[in-house]
Length: 517
Image (cartoon, rainbow, N blue to C red; front, side, top):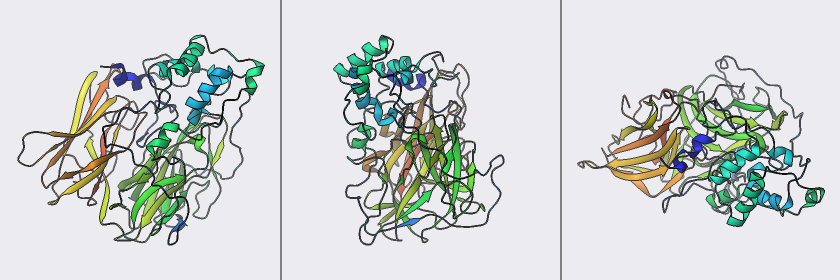
């Protein structure tokens, strides 16, 4: 086992080890690790060029509404609204040496700057670097006695940081010398160091997103209508107050009536961000509930799925806006409710207001030649003892017609180290590898299949997750990051053709695996 294969196990994300849910199913920043190399033609989804203004024929609407409903999940409360706090953006404190500050500003401040994003730690002053590290828990290989600068040196030396990029030999020498020397404070003269312009976001992710800003809100293109689903403070379909994010890690659910006309299909999804320093990820489900539109469920426990739940989209800090291929759109629920769950991680120490809106852009019925959707491939049969394990699930195209897979999104937890998908054609006894990528829990991205994978009738696709269980005990399926999952999310068309109706243990219905796998 190589160090790179194990390195993500040494460094838990900034979220606590007990974080529940599909915790980072769309790419990550902040405490994330560097991505592995991608095969030629395999890229993450990104926004298209030219989406810089509202064009003729494009409209933007708010996703609000009313309805009738069943009660809130047991143990939840309704939070008072109101914008009563201000973002923490202070750069005060003892400076660090100027030559170090220049490197840190360039390499780290996309996430760890004066106003961090996604729950990342602020790494600006000498005091920031000498805080006790919050990164370790009882199931990691490190102890909890280290300072932030000691953790930073380990992560830099082993390629964990900077996220998505590399340091030049000269910059690495500067940081290594400073960190190994105890991360000494700068002088008064260093307080006026010219570090150059601060990054506006994770530099490498700008390239992943096709050269566009990963955090730009979506605006409607010709023929599209875009809908905003904004977080708000109290349970009311007309509430416009900001949601107050308490210090620490938390999950919250926001219920909305489906606002688009029946038959509308999704072309893009993203967000209009308000307070990135406290946002970690969101997941959007179409589902059946009688909770009224406008309901706010505070402090839910991880990913909570209701009856007939279908995952239709999501995002994690640092990730790109999602855009479908030009000949495809995503099937959306024609009516009923959307549940958007936010994982928020506030490391500022004070309550923070947020008014971020999840955005879905749609086209009318028939606006794209192919209507597609998302299917959960893989397996939930995951109980495993210590050591290496391969777990797989098999899906057979029993639709009677070809199915085209345009993208994959692997999702495992912290023991996962690789995802592989193979296709067995009808009449063949061999498996053809169509996807094989190292996995890092802290860096989870979409992979566009170029060319797309076409499953003919009765072809099979097998998705294999490789795990290294170094916990010393037994690990089973579960929503905790100390348990495991094995999902290969596939975006394909026709919509629903790949699903075979085997109910997931966490309630999802758009799945495809064999019974017992």
